[in-house]
Image (cartoon, rainbow, N blue to C red; front, side, top):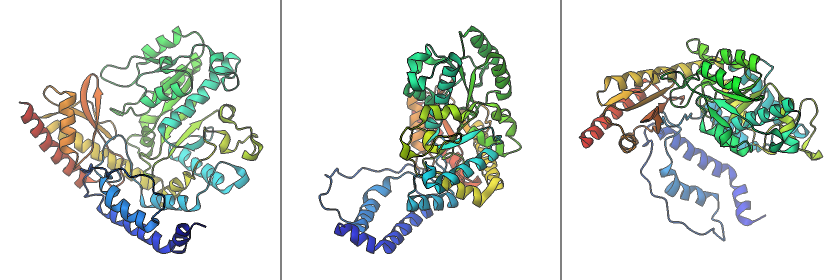
Length: 465
């Protein structure tokens, strides 16, 4: 064994304690550190010929890299839809790295069994029936891509071909209809060989991001053969929801594959006040849910569900005998693009076991209350304008007078040490969006965000005058 490895192995308990102390210090300060700190990267250096050992690497990380890390795990990071890591999820993730399991095969079965049990808990959490099989993947992009891959194979089944065997050209033209598809859908279509142009944008309801069912039915009637419909259970800008029950009824009439992107909107099911938004979710043919958002487990983690795991295995099956059996209940290695993945389910298992449905209901309801409070603050600020109702956990807003991309960027920059929000364009208007999904965020954080935002808006507006 190399001497540096041998030394670190011998000193491992003390080195892990040093890493623990660094982690605790970071987490103790995450609520007060600048959300987006000012930072310059260290000079580039060549790969060292001789390593310095773990203790020196920890010191260098602390000096040069840790100061630039954002407060994305903290309570005032409202960009994208970013959760943190609950205490239980963090412990589960540490143990995931410690055990270093590849959980894809029944030949070494513990990780696979734990993943299946955790998927069953998630299915229950979101109100899904056991008709849905599920698998952990890296994020919403991969979850949507896997769902669309199963849909692609379903299209082949309807047309008497298998694109998994014969290639996507055997399908002929494919149409994917959606009212307000997330960017990950077009990425997935590109990866799957269906192409961006397969996506047909269907009209949405006036002032909404929810699909217009009349316009959708008109498109369906015009299709020559089966197609795919991608529905939204929580759009990224305004958390708008398609009518999933009505879409399922249309599916029964027109025979399309119904995929639902419920990356964070699925969590509406946890609260009696919002569960109606995801009525009909169980009727979908495939579903995307992102877990490193509102489940507050570490990156990267998501789950995909489908009613057709047989078609999923047809797409992703691996022929090598050493990878384990296909069979009627395929090993996980046959269900996603990955032949290897870390035991992502362990962090999810820990946090669900630790806090249960009740704990997650409280997180969801507190985040929704925070979004609504910030929405009221935006409405009360003369320099700001709310662009859409706060339906769940996202506040979409802009400057009241002549907003531009530059002025919205200036607003985001002016508030960035106190809160991070991501730019967007809603109905042609440059805007910012604040997404509440962190388990730490409370009333005091919302008040602090609102005050910082109002001050920044006054400053930017005065500079524009």
